[in-house]
Amino acid sequence: MANDRIKLRIKFRKYGPIRFIGHLDVMRFFQKAIRRAGIDVAYTGGFSPHQIMTFAAPLGVGLESNGEYMDIEVCSITSCQDIMERLNGASVPGIEIVSVNVLPDTAGNAMASVAAAAYTVSFRQGREPLTDIAEALPVFLAKNKIPYIKKAKKGNRELDLKPGIYKLTYLKAENTFFMLLDASSAGNIKPGQVIEALLAESGESLQENALLITREDVYANMGTKDKPEFVTLDAIQA
Figure 1 (cartoon, one colour):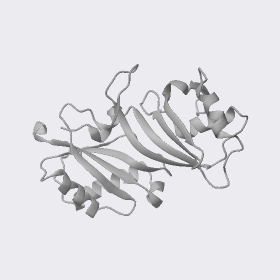
Figure 2 (tube, helix red, strand yellow):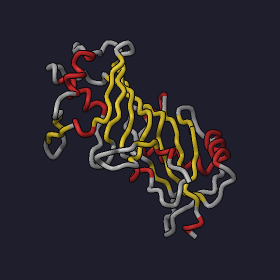
Figure 3 (cartoon, one colour):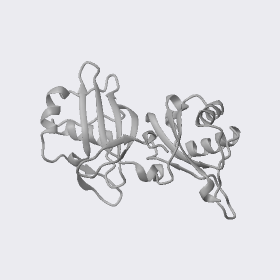
Figure 4 (tube, helix red, strand yellow):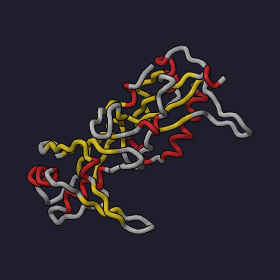
């Protein structure tokens, strides 16, 4: 019976050459890894059953991450530690399971839970901007509105990035940004958009392939829209 199933949230890292593997291939990899690991995964019904599996905010190709999430349903488990060890035993270099937790029945799935994401961002050597970031950033953050033109096949549209930048700091010694950005389906701000808008204030363009981006974690909002309380998705446990 469906209500006998156990919901698991699996947190994993994606790094190295694997960062160039797209989301569909990552999904196929986990389907095979789960079978190889002998996990008692639950399947959908119908003529073409498939593993019950959802991902939180699929990662863009070329980005590394220390905090990706996948939800699955299983019919039985020995322990979360056992599931983690089995999956790591069936994994490949570049994908590492870092935690497995049982979810409460009331928890939304990983994709629906996403409200924000944290990133570290730096410039590739030789592609640093001329703009003095330490000087420009306070002026940038003090603006009431941060316009950004989003280009699409159906035409360009102007966005205001300001409401979706929850945190933005810069460590000059390490030439690295830390960002906490809106990652909900309604907002979904990208780190590159923020850097583009910042450099545009000084009349400078972001060079192609200039950024090294790592997604550090993904968050749910346990508060309200006006007073958000962000918690990592692995903090939601039964």
